[in-house]
Figure 1 (cartoon, rainbow, N blue to C red):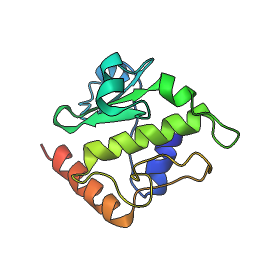
Figure 2: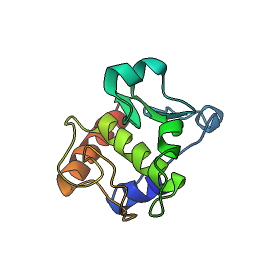
Figure 3: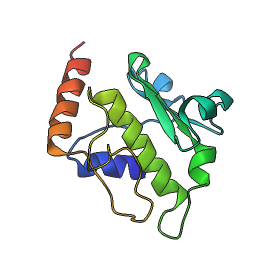
Length: 138
Protein backbone atom coordinates (compact mmCIF):
# COMPACT_ATOMS: atom_id res chain seq x y z
CA UNK A 1 0.00 0.00 0.00
CA UNK A 2 1.46 3.34 -1.07
CA UNK A 3 0.39 5.27 2.06
CA UNK A 4 2.16 2.70 4.24
CA UNK A 5 5.27 3.01 2.04
CA UNK A 6 5.30 6.80 2.48
CA UNK A 7 5.02 6.52 6.25
CA UNK A 8 7.55 3.65 6.44
CA UNK A 9 10.04 5.58 4.26
CA UNK A 10 9.79 8.37 6.82
CA UNK A 11 10.94 5.95 9.53
CA UNK A 12 7.57 5.75 11.31
CA UNK A 13 6.15 2.37 12.29
CA UNK A 14 2.40 2.02 11.89
CA UNK A 15 -0.24 -0.65 11.84
CA UNK A 16 -2.97 -0.25 9.24
CA UNK A 17 -6.41 -1.80 9.47
CA UNK A 18 -9.18 -1.80 6.90
CA UNK A 19 -12.89 -1.50 7.52
CA UNK A 20 -14.26 -3.28 10.55
CA UNK A 21 -10.96 -5.01 11.34
CA UNK A 22 -10.24 -2.50 14.13
CA UNK A 23 -13.61 -3.32 15.73
CA UNK A 24 -13.03 -7.07 15.42
CA UNK A 25 -9.60 -6.75 17.01
CA UNK A 26 -10.88 -4.30 19.67
CA UNK A 27 -8.40 -1.64 18.54
CA UNK A 28 -8.83 1.99 19.49
CA UNK A 29 -8.67 3.60 16.05
CA UNK A 30 -7.67 7.15 16.93
CA UNK A 31 -7.14 8.21 13.33
CA UNK A 32 -9.50 7.23 10.54
CA UNK A 33 -9.22 7.84 6.81
CA UNK A 34 -12.45 7.44 4.87
CA UNK A 35 -12.22 7.00 1.12
CA UNK A 36 -15.41 8.43 -0.34
CA UNK A 37 -16.64 7.53 -3.83
CA UNK A 38 -17.46 11.18 -4.53
CA UNK A 39 -16.56 14.51 -3.00
CA UNK A 40 -19.51 16.27 -1.36
CA UNK A 41 -21.23 18.72 -3.74
CA UNK A 42 -20.77 21.62 -1.31
CA UNK A 43 -16.98 21.10 -1.39
CA UNK A 44 -16.74 22.36 -4.98
CA UNK A 45 -18.01 25.82 -4.13
CA UNK A 46 -16.31 25.93 -0.73
CA UNK A 47 -12.78 24.73 -1.51
CA UNK A 48 -12.57 24.18 -5.24
CA UNK A 49 -12.50 21.25 -7.62
CA UNK A 50 -8.81 20.44 -7.07
CA UNK A 51 -9.18 19.30 -3.45
CA UNK A 52 -8.44 15.57 -3.31
CA UNK A 53 -9.00 15.16 0.42
CA UNK A 54 -9.41 17.00 3.68
CA UNK A 55 -8.68 16.34 7.33
CA UNK A 56 -10.68 17.17 10.42
CA UNK A 57 -8.09 16.93 13.21
CA UNK A 58 -10.63 17.59 15.98
CA UNK A 59 -12.38 14.35 14.96
CA UNK A 60 -9.23 12.39 14.13
CA UNK A 61 -10.76 11.77 10.73
CA UNK A 62 -9.74 12.49 7.15
CA UNK A 63 -11.72 12.18 3.94
CA UNK A 64 -10.26 11.26 0.56
CA UNK A 65 -12.27 11.75 -2.64
CA UNK A 66 -11.84 8.85 -5.07
CA UNK A 67 -13.71 10.50 -7.95
CA UNK A 68 -11.27 13.40 -8.00
CA UNK A 69 -8.24 11.14 -7.64
CA UNK A 70 -9.36 8.92 -10.53
CA UNK A 71 -9.46 11.97 -12.81
CA UNK A 72 -5.77 12.67 -12.08
CA UNK A 73 -4.36 9.37 -13.35
CA UNK A 74 -1.55 9.88 -15.86
CA UNK A 75 1.20 7.95 -17.56
CA UNK A 76 3.37 8.67 -14.52
CA UNK A 77 0.91 7.92 -11.71
CA UNK A 78 -1.56 5.13 -11.01
CA UNK A 79 -4.76 5.52 -9.02
CA UNK A 80 -3.20 3.48 -6.22
CA UNK A 81 -0.14 5.71 -6.00
CA UNK A 82 -2.13 8.94 -6.00
CA UNK A 83 -4.64 7.52 -3.53
CA UNK A 84 -1.81 6.44 -1.21
CA UNK A 85 -0.12 9.83 -1.39
CA UNK A 86 -3.37 11.63 -0.61
CA UNK A 87 -4.07 9.27 2.32
CA UNK A 88 -0.57 9.84 3.72
CA UNK A 89 -0.90 13.62 3.23
CA UNK A 90 -4.26 13.80 5.00
CA UNK A 91 -2.97 11.54 7.78
CA UNK A 92 -0.14 14.06 8.13
CA UNK A 93 -2.73 16.78 8.73
CA UNK A 94 -4.19 14.65 11.53
CA UNK A 95 -0.81 14.07 13.16
CA UNK A 96 0.92 17.43 12.67
CA UNK A 97 0.04 20.82 14.12
CA UNK A 98 1.25 22.68 11.07
CA UNK A 99 -0.30 22.85 7.64
CA UNK A 100 1.54 22.46 4.39
CA UNK A 101 5.30 22.43 3.85
CA UNK A 102 7.46 23.51 0.92
CA UNK A 103 8.71 19.95 0.27
CA UNK A 104 7.80 16.33 0.86
CA UNK A 105 4.43 14.66 1.24
CA UNK A 106 2.99 17.70 3.05
CA UNK A 107 3.47 20.13 0.15
CA UNK A 108 0.15 21.74 -0.87
CA UNK A 109 -0.20 19.82 -4.15
CA UNK A 110 0.53 16.23 -5.08
CA UNK A 111 3.32 15.89 -7.64
CA UNK A 112 1.68 14.26 -10.68
CA UNK A 113 4.75 14.26 -12.96
CA UNK A 114 6.82 11.99 -10.71
CA UNK A 115 6.17 8.62 -9.12
CA UNK A 116 8.88 9.09 -6.48
CA UNK A 117 7.82 8.26 -2.93
CA UNK A 118 7.70 11.55 -1.06
CA UNK A 119 8.01 11.34 2.70
CA UNK A 120 7.62 13.41 5.82
CA UNK A 121 10.60 15.62 6.66
CA UNK A 122 12.80 14.79 9.65
CA UNK A 123 11.12 17.52 11.72
CA UNK A 124 7.68 16.24 10.73
CA UNK A 125 8.69 12.67 11.62
CA UNK A 126 9.79 13.79 15.08
CA UNK A 127 6.54 15.73 15.56
CA UNK A 128 4.47 12.74 14.41
CA UNK A 129 6.31 10.41 16.79
CA UNK A 130 5.63 12.87 19.62
CA UNK A 131 1.94 12.98 18.72
CA UNK A 132 1.74 9.19 18.55
CA UNK A 133 3.46 8.85 21.94
CA UNK A 134 0.92 11.25 23.45
CA UNK A 135 -2.01 9.40 21.90
CA UNK A 136 -0.83 5.95 22.98
CA UNK A 137 -0.12 7.13 26.53
CA UNK A 138 -3.79 7.96 27.06
